[in-house]
Image (cartoon, rainbow, N blue to C red):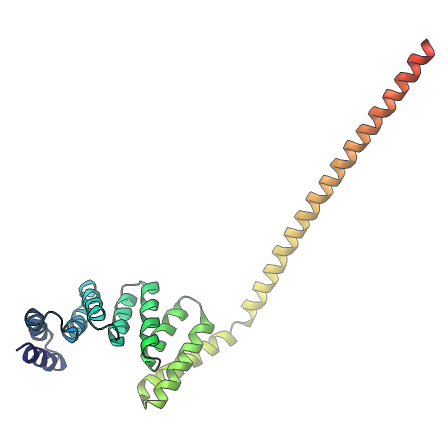
Length: 218
């Protein structure tokens, strides 16, 4: 009976009748609480209807019941990304890739996060990997998107050489300031030492003069 509910729910999901699909996934889980696919698919529905927190819960239960369900990690990562939680999203993409190194979508989505965080080199590598895998799997849509993203990143890096030069000059200026300040402190310390030595010498000379004067008086 649980499989009947699951199959009916999957059909309704494919027809984009999400509310009916959700009800049948609930029934499938009620009759068979350890059916990982039902939790996973219900998580997909909840993500689509923007119930992100419950979607994450369903994906998490699915990974507990079926630890090698890499798509559950992938979609949990996607849901975290939509919530703006980049570290958790990246961690889930990493785990999905570990379970399935040929999951081109995970590389692509991880590259998007890297790009948004300014890690352009890592983003470029992930887009490149996504494109290569998508090409081998004849996923033309993902291949084109990954190649386009690669080209945009390359163009961005080439269009900002002046920024790199400015950054280099700024760093050099800051280093110069630091060295100047350090040299100034060294000179001040040196002058202070000289002043102390001079004062000590003057004190010793005065002491000698005083002793000589006392001897003469006697």
